Length: 224
Image 1 (tube, rainbow, N blue to C red):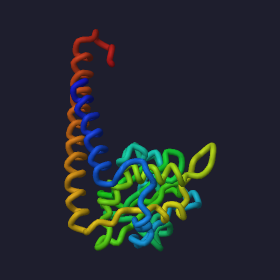
Image 2: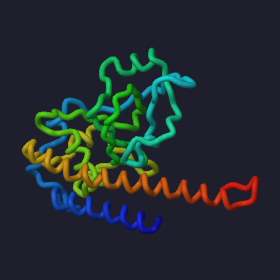
Image 3: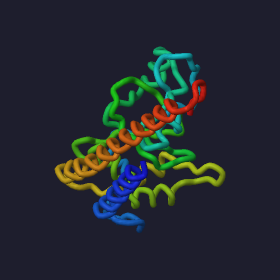
Image 4: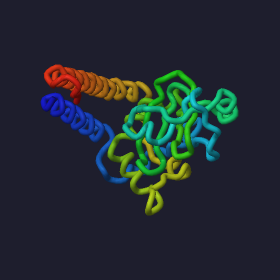
């Protein structure tokens, strides 16, 4: 367990080092970086009116579902097909979009790599890039970098609960590389992420095995 934890932490450090090498450190982004809205088809947020929830149906995501940087469960809110169609009649989130936490645990991006329908609350932003100019996956990795986090911390408003407004999000400055350079960085960062996912799976499997073995050794009726 400890060795896997050390390996996972080392991978995170390597990724942050590579992000810093690609995009720089904490300092404000250069003024020649363009604004995010100039490279995007849409920057918006979720519904501002709480929908009628159902016992099952189509997932309705909360900030807690993306706070880890990946889609995480359990899904607690569900809406009907009719409500989904109403909420998404102007814009349906799709594979390749980015979700971005705007309130509370703000500044966390999640790349939409699933193809099932969903909707989400207003505390989550959605970004759709012009893929022929700015790759969505490249932006996903950039938003984890120190310059992106610097901008998030600088622009977050409020005291009790920090919030990034859509106006602020649209003003983020992003380094626009040639598309082939973006793709190369995406491959590099994706390889590190995939290695991390593999370590997480091994860690979970070891924990489950340990729990199983402990239960086998304990007196009958006692579990851990």
